[in-house]
Image (tube, rainbow, N blue to C red; front, side, top):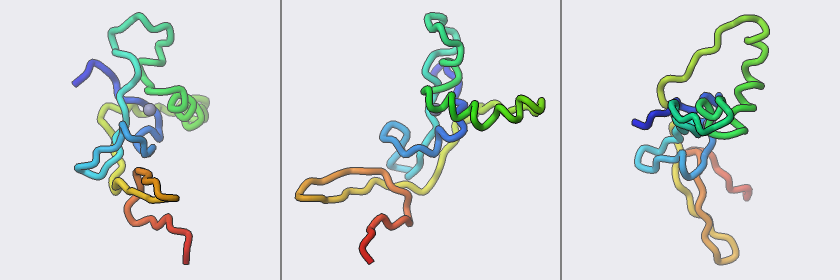
Amino acid sequence: MPNKHFCQGPHCHTRPTQDRFLKSKGIIRGRYAYAKIDDNRYYHESDKYFCSQSCKFGWLSENMENIERGIPIPFIRERRITEGYQKATEESYGRKYHSIQKIGIDNNTEQ
Ligand SMILES: [Zn+2]
C-alpha cells in the first residue's frame, strides 16, 4: 500500500474514469491523494489529501458549512467504492467507442 492518504474528495469514488474503474469487480474506486504523506517537495499541503483540484473544491463545497458550525468532518481512511459499473462499447459511424457505464441505465435514446 502506498504511503498516501486516500483522496478526501466527497465524490472521488463516484467518477467513472478509466483509472478508477476495476473491470473484474465492476466497481469505481476512489483514488489515492496526489502526493505522498512524507514528501515535502510539494508546496501545497493539500496535495497530500486530494487527487485533483476538482476533489479539493468538491470537499470545500461539501464541508464549509460544517466547518462554520464546528461540526467534525470524517477523515476517509478506507478506499471507497461505487458498485455496479461495466465497460460498454458503442458503435457510431463505423467507429467503436469504449465507455464505463452504470449497469441498468439504458443510454439508448430511441424508444
Ligand atoms: Zn479525488
